[in-house]
Image 1 (cartoon, rainbow, N blue to C red):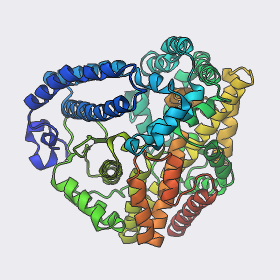
Image 2 (tube, rainbow, N blue to C red):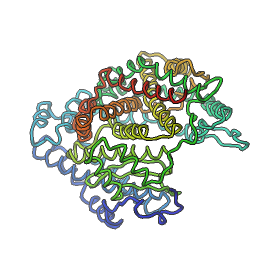
Image 3 (tube, rainbow, N blue to C red):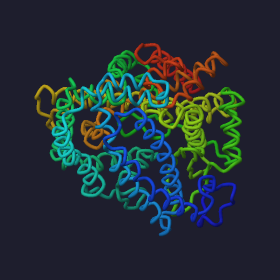
Image 4 (cartoon, rainbow, N blue to C red):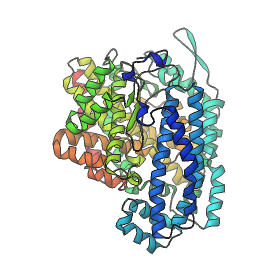
Length: 594
């Protein structure tokens, strides 16, 4: 569903930003009013020890956050409609600048609250008048031991201004300075790049995949010592910041601020090590079904089954999604239908529209979804995925006060992936074409392979490199390549050739510059699959627990929130459930392919 101009798109396929501001002029009026009034928050500086002043400030801050959120979301989504519209560009630039000013103006809050006596913070946190803010106050209280003196905090801020540059330098190198070569594909010269490389790994000709893989990695190998130096610097910066704030390790620091028990991280690695068998079995089946003499690392992304897409119009895709989500009950589906009917979704692609898809919650209004829908199976699943994000936001904002409505990133992909799994299970139970069924089974297995296993392998690599740095061991290109190759062999098994280039893969992963982040992809999909399995097997009781989870926002730590939905990531049960799901799916595919 691509159009050359936005004005040609039927209204029903465009989101209605009028639910936020009726016209751009209304946005301008609200912007001017906000710009005039938000500075009044500064008058509370130095007064937050007083109960009445603190409560007044927090309530005013909530109101201000909602107004700023609405200004930002309207400007951002409007800009995403057409990135070449100068008026929309200017609007987005202005509100982004205002957001920066607002952050600076309110930067006094955390340090001032952290300086309050423990007894006073505990008193306020237990006071019913502060029920909307008890989580925030408890978090400040628990983090006090990691807050430094004013002089030390200033020093840390100055250090942070350059120690975070490793990520930026990597980004510049990866997106501009690394020179990728051209290769010949189907008789034509093709310029390699990140996107083109991903597409060529799906090319049906193994020779093309091989050439793309070797040529792509050659560009990284040529600067591998520079990349090793950048990553070593980033890891050392993580270690420095953790030690300066009195944490035992960089991992402990990262998990502390996410409110995640280290047991979860350790349990993830341990349980996946105990469940390599289905992964290795799937890799062996992929080799057999592709009919290749040798399965290589560059053969893991090519589709096994062709011409198996569920090609349908957008309305039909929405009906499929609703049928897949039917186990979640009428009240859930009513909101989904309302989103479809009331233009919460921007559906069609245009040349100047932002690519991809996302869900954006607008405080005090409702979530919105951006799509670029095409008639493919992937895009049907994208509707379900983004609707999961939107429903999580919808339930949280409906149930929680402003201060507790935002949920942690740790649980952000659970609802979206749960929707995908429910849709997949529905399709598998209804499709009659064996080729489509094979494709869907492969889709699920690859989802688990790339999101659960591969991201856990990345997480284990991060754990190893930071532990090395904390022991004073050098992170050289050679040492990191050796560690990475060992992990790759462990996770993928003996059915695939571990091509020499794959040991350099760590050097191109941007997420490594945001330490201890990738494990959340693994725990997210594990949680989602467990919840979906419980919903399908237990029915109403599991659905009720899941909706309670969706409604929690940030009112609890994320690991405890998942326990409400019946998922305890500190135990082996969720991992056993997903391993069984992987095995059962694999058995179905093996049976169909006999």
